[in-house]
Image (cartoon, rainbow, N blue to C red; front, top):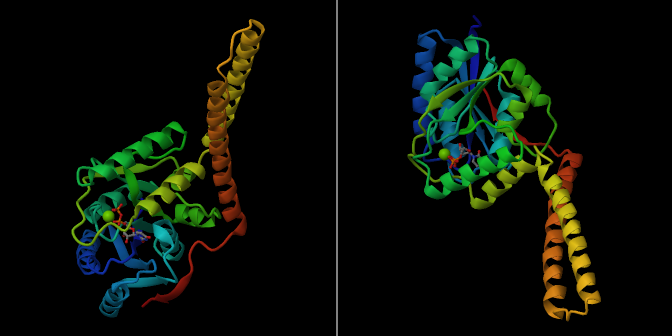
Length: 314
Ligand code: UDP
Ligand code: MG
């Protein structure tokens, strides 16, 4: 059985001043319990301040001053959750790391179970929500729709798994060598390792503060998930193109036939309608191709995924 010596708990924080104190207390008491049960030798709690513009840093400074297991990473701006998680994984020192949201909607009590799977040899342990009852109807609806859609497109993901997961050192090291910029970590880790364990839990409602995901952020995250992992949209465009050509051919034959048979052609409809349809399809196709080109552009630039302003470390 593999024993866990040192674990990093990575907590991304974006404008979380209301929740961090309570989170730290609960996390510390759970980790101390885990140490007592000798499931783990030691731990660090690594907070990644993802460019917050509220009092988050002040609260983190306070925690750092009184707890020498706390480590703070201050990013230069808001890099988004995926960027913050990558920063945490790049800087974590543990033999394993758990990523968990600052609002503790995912229960940290489950970390012990995750460590149990680590001991059995799993390098990847995924937290999986049993239901989405605490989410708003809109979130549930859009999330379900998105996951079903992305699955049809052929992207491998685990249903109801967010970013609550344990990764072991070998997998973290491998993950850190990936250079792609458009990040959809929950699918990236599966592309590295398909032997994972699952830990099931009920997701709690957010106790304080509000969600940090605006509609725009969710949309861009979903697009990254689709476009970084599948060429299916491009293929759909090609198939639609072929179908349109066949349709145009059939239409052309029909028009020629009507013309030769001396029928009066209804001029407006037959001219304008196809124009609308085909220009619509063309624009859509260009848009999808443009999305991929945009992503290629981002990859080619190889800008840093995150940039650390400073690190507080004991
Ligand atoms: N978060 C982040 N950067 C962002 C947006 C969110 O680091 O740009 C963090 C946030 O502080 C929290 C986690 O990501 O720890 C999940 O955010 P939230 O709870 O708002 O998401 P939801 O539960 O609504 O999906
Ligand atoms: Mg949340």
